[in-house]
Amino acid sequence: MGDQLSTAERSSSRNPTALRTSPVLTVRQLSKRYPGKTLLDHVSFELDRQKIYALMGANGAGKTTLLNILTGFVRPDAGVVLLHGQPIGHLQPHERTRTGMSRSFQDLRLITTMTVRDNLLLATGRDPTDAWAKALVAPFFKSGAHLLLSVIEGLLKEFSLSADTVAGNLSYGQQKLLTVACAAANGGDLLLLDEPVASVSAEHVHRITMSLRRLRSQGATIVLIEHNSDFVRSIADQILFLSDGHLQHYTTLDALRADPFARGSYR
Ligand SMILES: Nc1ncnc2c1ncn2[C@@H]1O[C@H](COP(=O)(O)OP(=O)(O)OP(=O)(O)O)[C@@H](O)[C@H]1O
Ligand SMILES: [Mg+2]
Image (cartoon, rainbow, N blue to C red):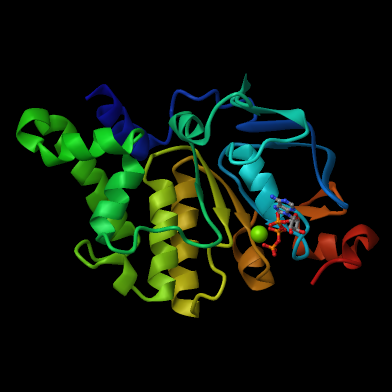
């Protein structure tokens, strides 16, 4: 029950107990090499609260790998990742979710045979089995289930999704919306989104843009991998550009384009 209540509470205020002055995420000297390719070469950066960062770079630069390392799906060769000042390198992906970090995948990874509501329900749970049990036996967990369902109702409204539609029957753009909604569903304050608007219609890009801005206004920090420069211009507070293992910070897309470091590999 405790897990459920705090999930719902966090969804409305996005981790108010987090230290507001310290960086949300601190990365120090992160390195990752695959045979024949250095993706991260002693990369260091910090992410501030309530900002949207676009992570850019050419195909194969290592953007998804960086997200995989931050979320615990891939181990770095070296380096430290701190979330709200606490090291998280030893935590499994599902344990990192409990600390307020969530992500979406480049290849969607929805459960296409389940409804929108059930995908969201699973995404809200710190322990999916637990969330299912508590929601499905509502009489025994009434207040927790109510809170959980109100979180889901809020997400359905925010992302204009229909609860009972089977996820596999949604359009591609709606599936993208659902992946972003699922990432937001655990109420965490750090969202890492892998190409949330790739191949999506202008209407759905607009919806995703509005929802991400709203999440930012509620306190979320968002990192989104993106190639679409119009989208980046419309939403990003800062740009991180990854190339040849090095990460550079820019305040605008124009600044990035003016830099010879980025110009060579920018598409
Ligand atoms: N497990 C792995 N073993 C070996 N090489 C890998 C592995 N995972 C990724 N790579 C390689 O690392 C490089 C970076 O891959 P990654 O998916 O992180 O790039 P990306 O910047 O997300 O690219 P894209 O824009 O195409 O999504 C690619 O050359 C990829 O083939
Ligand atoms: Mg990628």
